[in-house]
Image 1 (tube, rainbow, N blue to C red):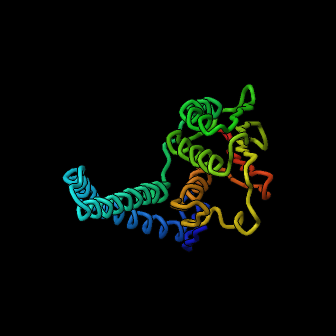
Image 2: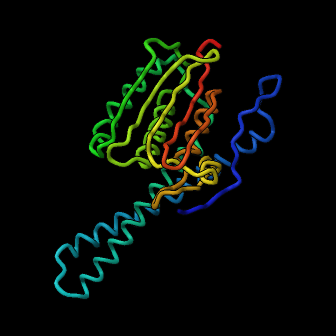
Length: 249
C-alpha cells in the first residue's frame, strides 16, 4: 500500500447572496495555479517521451550486451514518463472540477452508455456485471461528461477489488427528492482505517495508482449538490451510495 496525503478538502459553500465564500475563492485560485503548473510540466514531458521513443527505435535490435542494457534503461524511463503523464491527467481532472455545464440528464441512459463501454473489460476479467436500474427516474441536472468520469472511476475502483467470479452491481432508485446510484461489489472490501482515507487526494492502495480517482469522483458529485458515502467490510465487499438532487429541486 502506498499513502500520500495532501490537506486538500474541497468545499462548495455559497453565501446568502449566492456568491462563493472566501475559502472557495482561494481554492479556485490555487486550483487554477496548480492546473497551469501541470500544463507547464506536460510540455517538456512530451518532448522527453518523444526522444525516449526515438532512442528505443534506434535500439530495437540491440547488437551487444551494452546496447541491451541501454534499451532496458530507456524502457524504464519510458514507463516512468507514462506514469507521470497519467498522474498529470488525473490531477488536471481533479483541479478542473469547478463550473459545470449542466443539462437535464437521464441517469439510467448515462449508466447504460458507460456500461456499454466498460462491459467488455469487466467481463474479460470474469467479473459478473449486473444492472438493476429503476424503470423511470427523474431527470438530473448533470454535467454528463464530468459525471461519466465519476462513474468510470467508481467502476475502476470496484474492478480492482474484485477477483474472477465476484459481482459488480449498479442500481438506481428514487430517494429524498433525488436519485440514488449504488455501485456495489462483492470483492475484497476495506478495513476501517483504509475506508477512512479513500477520499484523500494521493492516497492509494493500488500499486501504480495515483490516488486521485475517488477524490475527483467526490468533488464531481459534491459540485452537483450530491453526496457520496461508502460501506465496506474486509472479504464482504464494498458499496458506494451516490445521492443526486432532481433537476428542478
